[in-house]
Every structure is written in structure tokens, then in C-alpha cells.
Length: 190
Image (cartoon, rainbow, N blue to C red; front, side, top):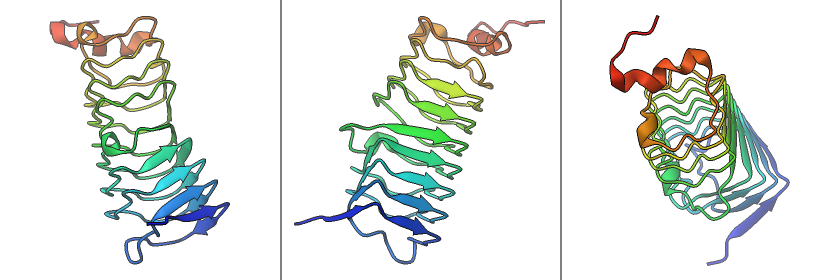
């Protein structure tokens, strides 16, 4: 089956819940104010694409390729990024709501999350080495056997995880965030 190829497209105000996005490869395309919620985006490839003000909530992204893709002001509730095509997988998230999404066991070295809500996100066994969490809310985010070496969480908040079950060598944390690293000890910090 020959896949369609789309390059340098600028797609605005589209509702892909009514008319699905055509399967194929999208390169250097911009999607603005588009609705993908509950859509089937499986087997689609996005390379050097930019999504702004889009809603992806509960979409099927099984075997979807995201290669150097940027998301800004997007609603991305409950996405299973762990089911994506992992070849050249690379993201940048800014001001996105990623609550209840999963990055389970992915290799995401150097990824950036800026001003994002990451409530109850699954980072279990994820390689986040040298990643940046800039001003992110990580309430209820799950970190276990996660590699956070050289990552910067110094401006983020509401995280809570056991440093003994994660690799945090040379990671950066703020003084205000230290209680989230000591929760397992059930101590009172004043």
C-alpha cells in the first residue's frame, strides 16, 4: 500500500473527529486549532511538524511516528506515547496538558516539557536523561526505575518519588522540591 505524502501544509481549524486525518507521512506541516480527540492517528508519520492549540485527548497513536515534533498549548489527555513508533522519536512540549498520559519505558533523552501539566503521567522505566521540566506540575506523576540523570526539575513542583528507585545523579532540584524526594520517610519538614 502506497502512503500519501504531505509537505509544508498549513492546516487550520480542522475537526478530524468528523473527517479523519488522511493516513500518510506529514513533513514540515503546521496544525493550528485542530481537533483530533478520540481519533485514530495510528500508522501516521509526523516529521518536523508543529501543533498549536490542538486537542489530541484519548486519540489512538499506536505506531504513530513523531520525529522532532513540537506541541504548544495542546490538550493531550490519556495518550499512550508508549505505543508510538520509537524510531527517531523526539518531542517538545510547551504549555500542554498531558494528564493521564503514558511514556512508559520510552527513551526520551533531552526532551523538554515547558509550562506543562503532567498530572498522573506514567514515567515508569523511562529514560529522561538530560531532560528539562521547566515550570511543570508533576502531581501524581509516576517515577520508578526512571533515569533522570542530568535532568532539570529545579523549577517544577508537586513531584514525589523515591530517589532510591530512580537514577538521579547530577539532576537538578529546587530547595522547595526536596520534600517530594523525602515523602517515603514520612517526616515533617519545617
